[in-house]
Length: 146
Picture 1: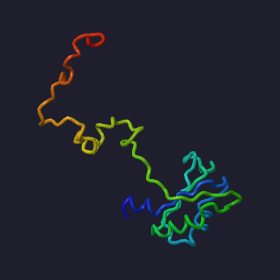
Picture 2 (picture 1 turned 90 degrees about the vertical axis):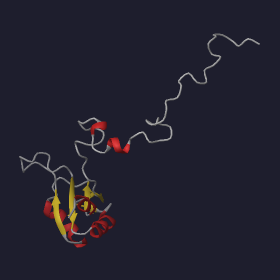
Picture 3 (picture 1 turned 30 degrees about the horizontal axis):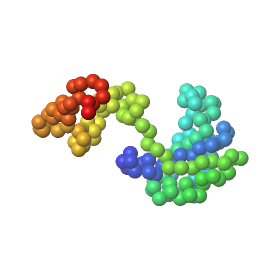
């Protein structure tokens, strides 16, 4: 499965109580379809007793199942809390977009998308316009003489 279709089949479950486990999330979402994986990110991966971050990712086999889970579980009560279930967003690459450590113009595809082919941009093949054109009569300071 490609990364794009994986993210379409993945839901973000937010607002989880601290004592919720991976198996609790799996049990709650299994009625909507075959689940590939449930991830419950922890604050500190080295310490398993540390509570999770309060959200989970549930990846389904089929994106239609993810849609059903969103429609049925969003704003539902789960372990005494109202949870928010939505389509998961693919993580941003550290190499692309704002906030990356690479200059925007050095990122792949930026130059092709932002090349100056607009009507207002100067065309490299066209002769350059005279920058002084239209400035005749402005060589004298002050109000115009009548």
